[in-house]
Image 1 (tube, one colour):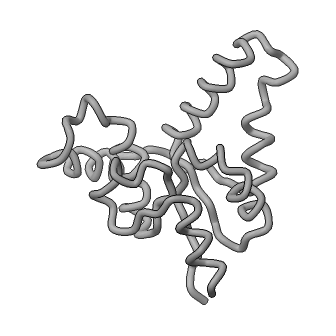
Image 2 (cartoon, rainbow, N blue to C red; image 1 turned 90 degrees about the horizontal axis):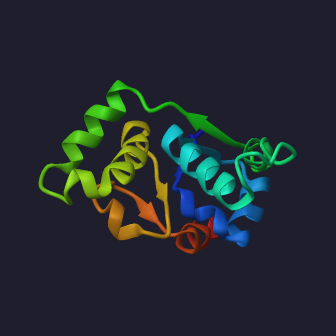
Length: 137
């Protein structure tokens, strides 16, 4: 059996079609702890950090989509720092390097709406491109 693993960028969750597919897919979907931080930040910024009822919304949302959170570790740090050499300034794109490093580490596709920001990752797709590809299988 071929492993079906994908890494998701923060912005893919704005695609309802992709999220609906993800709920029922047989892919193992992961986000980095960096992406998790961004999702929580954006939610809390929108709803307010004292929103007690919604504080666990991000976790429930990710659970409903069967998305797992993978830690940013030493190997990811090594990959991210090396990817920055010869590409964009690290300071400007640090989070993208950190998020994409998980796709490189796991040797799997990266799904994002900002394909150009991850040009250094071997396989990068927008949510629509990825769905066209997998729905043909």
